[in-house]
Length: 205
Image (cartoon, one colour):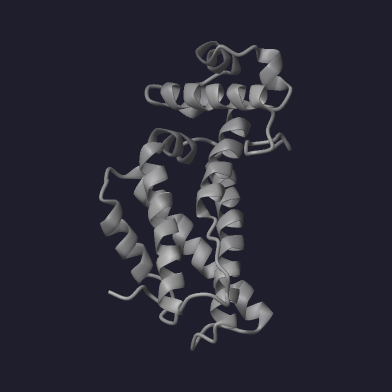
């Protein structure tokens, strides 16, 4: 993958418009065409973007897709938590809301996720998601440790292991869900939350 800027508040307005046009064009093309069959020429034609502009930041359509979907997935998974504020149940509710938002995002961009997960770049995309979610999971584990949640690992090595375990399971489950036809976000959120470690706090019913 290249190191092109995936998007965000600091992106130049013109560059952001171009990025958005390419993302939207890719989503439309993926409704009828496999990712591995979409050429740079076809994507740029659909988006109304010059190929030279595309190649200024990306190496291939697959490279672009992985970076953009990975970025959006990561941005939605951010949970702003102050370890000193709120009880564990309130904090857990924020994490559950973030998970629900991720599932809602997957539903809205299902064609893109299916395209990536059925492409030759599947395992690279899986790795990108795993790295991003593992980082978020580690931050969550550290929050629970700081809050003194019983069972939450306090040793740095054990925290890394817990984060890897949580991320691996969550990414795998979300990939399976993305490839299916289920649209019940609330039910999926409840199922995924139930699979978390037994020491993981849950929102008050």
